[in-house]
Image 1 (cartoon, rainbow, N blue to C red):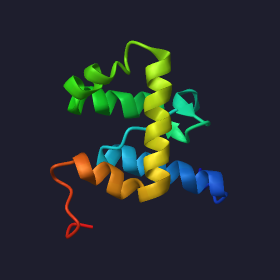
Image 2 (image 1 turned 45 degrees about the vertical axis):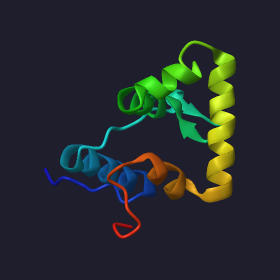
Image 3 (image 1 turned 180 degrees about the vertical axis):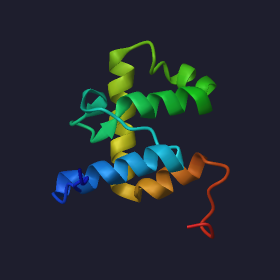
Image 4 (image 1 turned 30 degrees about the vertical axis):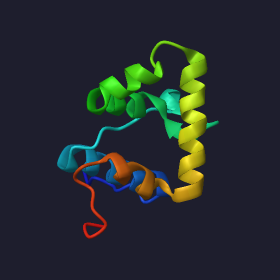
Length: 101
């Protein structure tokens, strides 16, 4: 029996996500992790920050208080709006250079 291709947009999206996960090491997120108020995947953001900048995050108290977490997200949102996401994240990433962009 012939195998049919899903030619709808959702089928194309599924193929792209599957390829990125299987071949490029991407991690597929889920809707429950997405914070609509800040337009960010909180689970992955805070996992990354905990793994890469644990001491700084501890100093800020972000993992110990919802208020501190909201303050951090508000500041992050403001900095991204003002400077752009690449500038905000490249400022602290040692491997990110303007030439690489």
